[in-house]
Amino acid sequence: MQKVNIAIVGLGFGAEFIPIYQRHPHTTMYAICQRNVENLNKVGDAFGIEKRYSNYDELLLDEAVDAVHINSPIPNHAEQSIKALRAGKHVACTVPMATTVDECMEIVKACKESGKKYMMMETVVYSREFLFVKELYEKGELGKVQFLKASHQQDMDGWPDYWPGLPPMHYATHCVGPVAGLLKLEADYVSCFGSGTIREELAKIHNSPFAIESAHIKFKDSDLSAYVYRSLFDVARQYRESFEVYGSQKSFEWPLIEGEEAVVHTAKKAEHEIPERVTVPDYAHLLPEEIRQFTTKGVYDMDEQQHLSFVQGSGHGGSHPHLVHEFVMAIVEDREPFPNAAQSANWTSVGILAHESAMNGGKLMNIPDFVNV
Image (tube, rainbow, N blue to C red; front, side):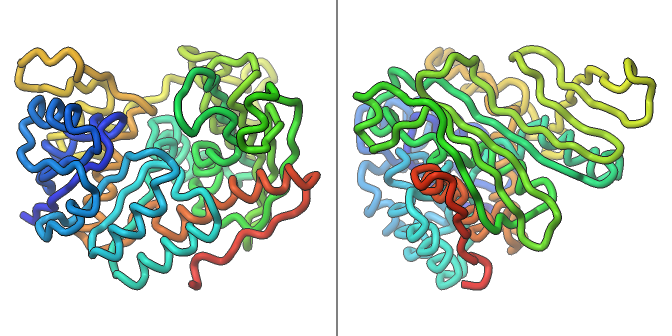
């Protein structure tokens, strides 16, 4: 059985993936990398990982590393992805792919030139809600899909470093990914409007004044468009990542409040029978048995040793083991992962160009062709 040697870069959010790689039948959790040596050793000791790097460039020189999973801060994503691809490593990277369209293009080129796999680890397209809607679509229960909609609203006050004042659409993949990903559509152009204003001390950091940015996306070679909206500061709203799809036979709507059930609308019923609350099932059965537990609850140390700092429930709709499995199997089976480099670049660039559109009064912005680079 082929084993892929994985190195995880960044051990905040990144540590959540360590036990999944340790148990996946096709991976060896080979190395970890973080600049903070104290935390590097703490995580390494807790999980029994001997190979540790505090310097990313030194990690890339290790010929035993087959693939890196990057979980570093957003400003480092593009540079680290490009370096890894050019060093002959497969790359999984947390969202977003990059912070500029040019960086997205450079990653796509580096991926093609190296022949290595690149996958942006977009959680929503592997959440149980997305997988549920995907199943409805593939069974033909939605009928003809007519419209897609998504949102990501979060209060980021108090978050450190690069987050304060961040333009909402610069972190848009959680809502762009699902509307593009369900039918594997390619965004063609986008128009976005800003609304409201955030506090001056936040607005001046990135010269981004808007409290909410809302965008319409037109898809290439399709009659479909989608609507997405984002907020990060000065908007009263419980955290919500939502994805909704409207079909000719059935439609799916995300619950308004965390903890409520989703709603499926079925056409041609009596009016009061059209909406129905549904319990979205888990999709662990799609995974190898060794990592199924991580869709619903994940305790880092599965060997009964009590490392309380590493007790963690599964987040992001149970997506983490699905993301790992897709990335690993794309390498093992020598196929493109979903989303691949071109798709990741398309989704990320929608957000980047949507913000530019908002700063220019809703100007139509064309998305570059990343497929035929």
